[in-house]
Image (cartoon, rainbow, N blue to C red):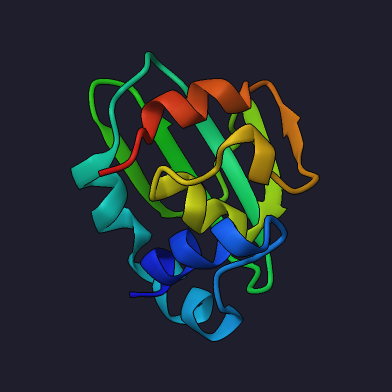
Length: 119
């Protein structure tokens, strides 16, 4: 599995990333993973924009964690980061030592880490 491969690779190279081809395949299936592994942290509605690939995603952290395609609705919080980093966030692998530059407005990255503690 691509994320487990990253778990090993990052031990030898702190700059390691999940394989780009795997990110392309896995990014669209994150809704199921988020719903299963995510922990509600309080009401939050976040518009997420990723790069490489570049889907726009809606994340809700209310009574349950819901993640899906952005529907164009205005949201009070925004997060922009590489898709590879978002994949690792949802899998519980976006620790501070391995977080690339990102833009967060109205949302704390540590809150998102708490919502996705890993499995």
